[in-house]
Image 1: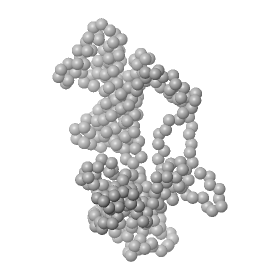
Image 2 (image 1 turned 135 degrees about the vertical axis):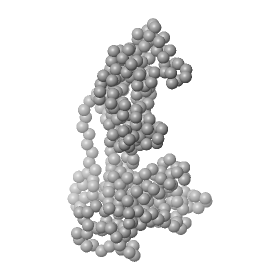
Image 3 (image 1 turned 45 degrees about the vertical axis):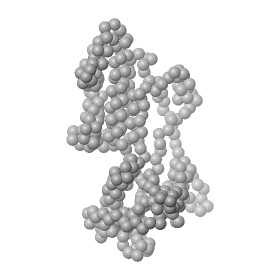
Image 4 (image 1 turned 180 degrees about the vertical axis):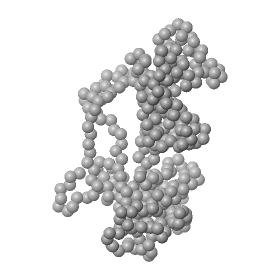
Length: 367
């Protein structure tokens, strides 16, 4: 017996189906993994539609290869497939079909897949090739006999396993008397400030359906604070006028750049001198800022976002980005109204139904 794992990649690879590819073999923890070239699954673009796609279990079953493989493109003049999935054959004595037991080969197979994808990304110079995680992608595993045929039913042993999932993207909830009315009231010359764009882009990187981009998201969040405090101090200095404006201009434009106040000094000493309030006064926000700053610096200089020597998890990064929003709002609370962002806060309810399996014949579809 062996197992065959099909993984939804989330990106595309161009493959010539007429060529014979020798599988890439990886050995790990007593298992042998054979990685085959990517292929086009039976999933169509319409199948991936969150609101109108097929039942989720049906979607997982469509991960098997389309037959025949479609060839809508040419590679070196020959028909080529736009592949979207990866097949891995798994061999090992520890494979289990027990119903109440997790298959230990699955995380190891994903680790082998990611070793392959990491190398493909670097050698091909393709930034859109990304790692896959068993809790983030669609996958389907089948146990097969040695000759590749389906194993016979033998309850309570299972013949396969799958993970199916859907991702609800963040969407604005428009009501005529709500968000829409705020948009209508904005002046014609309104332009989104850079710190708001930076923070929103940081959230996009963390809320990715496939894999959170922790390091880049924290760099953007830290940059949002840096641009916000610089603008806030400029506004405050101009409000004071006179010698304060001249002093701030001198402090912020000295050459070389390292003679300027640091971001830490701007949020504490300089802000305190202009307003009497320092971010240090809020222990929670100050700690969040220091952690964000450390994680950002570690990522920029060492390639891995860390706090206290430990890699930052996606949950920790999400918390730091949420705290960044609070820091920006705290800074704006000390500014005149015209220097603040337009805000809209209102509680709404939103609900959708998504079918897991197809309804029984003759039953009414409740999805």
